[in-house]
Amino acid sequence: MNSIENDHYTYRVTWSEDDQEYVGLCAEFPGLSWLAASPEAALRGIRRVVADSVEDMQCSGERVPEPLASRKFSGKFMVRVPPELHRELTLQAAEAGVSLNRLATVKLTH
Image (cartoon, rainbow, N blue to C red; front, side, top):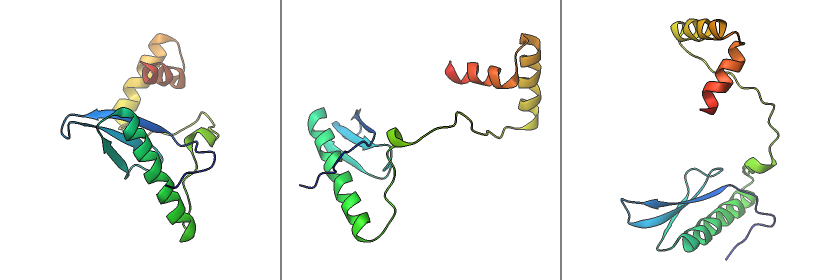
């Protein structure tokens, strides 16, 4: 079994109604998953699959995804919306007496 030293990837285990098993997922490797009868086994399985994938990528010279936990975020991102929505949101912000950025932040957090 392969393991990754300092494995800081983002894992999630959820129930799959279709498969009637738990599925282990990794945000940095969206194409990978692992099905198992228990959540603990699903987590162990996806961690093994990720470790194997990282080893294969390293051996073939591919770029290995950086863990989300290690990334630095600026707090800025651009979102494109239709002009009509832009106008409506600008109006809502003006009526609320806040900036468009503030209005968008409030809407994104609810």
